[in-house]
Amino acid sequence: MIVFCIIFTILFIISVLFLLLCLSDLEIEINKFLFDSTCKKGGKLKDYLIYIRLKLFDNITWLKIKIDSKKIMKIRDSKIFKNKILAKLKEENSIKNLILKNKKDIINFNNLKELNIKIKQLELKMKLSALETIITSLSVAIISSLISIIVARTAKRNNLNKYHYIITPIYENKPILKIKLNCIIDVKIVHIMNIIYILVRKRSVLDDERTPNRGTYVCSND
Image (tube, rainbow, N blue to C red):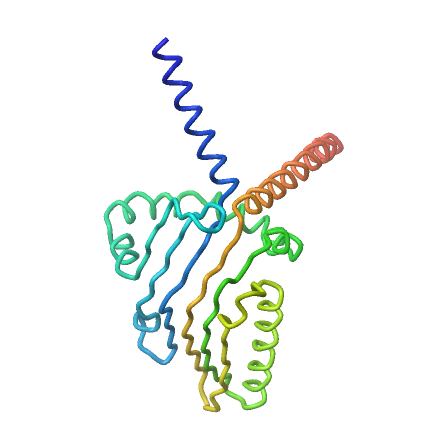
């Protein structure tokens, strides 16, 4: 009876967590992100602050993770990361190979569209130089157009005053990129789960189609 109660409790907790995930939004807030390519190596990326939240009904935060440059440095310099995680990643290329095999599906526009990503806030200041004046001007025009399209498709109509971006050309004889960014991105967990399911199903179908072909090819050489 005790074992049954324990199993039931575990299953109940898992079910509740799964339901919470399905009803939740993943919100990523990036604050004080500063990048300057003119700085020396190691100082190009300035201090930054990232909040990762799981929000229920877009109002109730039930999980919050704070990430800053100091935490990243501590994790990167820790013995566990160097001796175990980093070593394991070097040995196992399965994740890398999986991403490379599915990169077309991962960046597929339809899949990205299905995610229904929402940008709740955007404050972007960018300065760039691409050596030649014509290329710099063209780059600024293209980037500005792309950002306009993205904001038009992902912005919340009732908060249009929260979207500001300025792309400024720098006409110098060297490549320069300076970025100052504050933004909040929101996506529903259920949409992420749906895309993962589609990618996994598509991969399994492709693997099933390849298996008989391999067998026929092998037999033809005998």
